[in-house]
Image 1 (cartoon, rainbow, N blue to C red):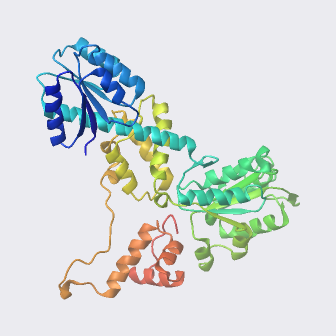
Image 2 (image 1 turned 90 degrees about the horizontal axis):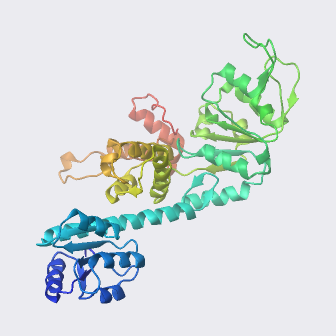
Image 3 (image 1 turned 30 degrees about the vertical axis):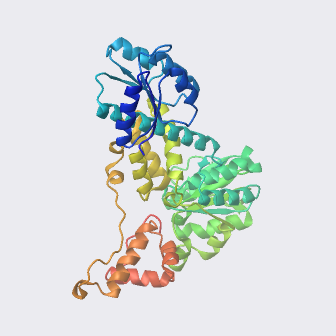
Length: 461
């Protein structure tokens, strides 16, 4: 069924012809021979489109379009007229009609106009639904989502928001770990204090030590004045250590002692000074694997991992993809000064099918790019990046019945393990859980697959 259509014409014979022709093309058609009877039949949700003649006794098609719009503003009306003038078209559109077709009538042209009108109506309805969903979706700070994975995250955050316990936020790159940290700060009693964030991967070791602990005048070259470290600057508030898995091994004992004793000694200083902060740390790495590889101290891990919060990847959040996409459309369309209302159905399918290795950050960049290049009022498939347009899921499939062409079990296992590792964004810990094997077993197999060399580091390892 292509849609439910109401045909209105005072010529009963014309109604019969249109009913027969449109039903043959897959539409469900109801007809009325007077505008008054048509208005009685119109109700919100009763029809997907209306086709009416322009010249009818008692009420013309333009007035009927105006009255239908008052009952159901989203119901498209197509006016049939023998007078294909610009003035007639303008009057019909101003009255609320979606389109008009001229006599002599070609049913194929009318059917095409109906399909476009119904698709446009469905798209507007989906946009309204997504806008309501964005407004009504449960939020936690700047986090947005209604999927079961996000509801579980919100429930955990609600339970720990009033605590001063140290929190370790884990998750893949781009999932929104800093948004979680900021939300915990903004809802905590410390919200009147500072929120201080530092990336442990962004600074070299000497500079990072000075940033965290501060330094006294003359502690090193260019230390022309005493500088207060971030541990002290964040006192009374929250210190967010992002990418803590990249913290240099030499600095880890000093941070551990500072967190245990709540005092720290600035670089070049002689005295330890007290500080009072809530620590929130984040990482996209598997810290337990880093401990086994002696790249991260186990005692520091236990100190920062008092409460563990895992932010789900976007691929596990289902319809949140479209919810977030609509949110980003409204933001970037407003910034660009464009009228972009939503996503075309075909483009929405591509967004849902894609794996989003870059998570929410990648989706945001995708929508920002689409807003920049689109020339329509909806995001179309051609507005999306090529890798999203052309994305196809990969599978491990055995297709041959010839025993000589079937791969050995070891090769099937190798392909499957590498496919799982790809699907979980490179996280060896998560891949091991999915495969049901220990991490050491997974590491050993990966080393075998790479000729005894360790696998290249991945963002989520």
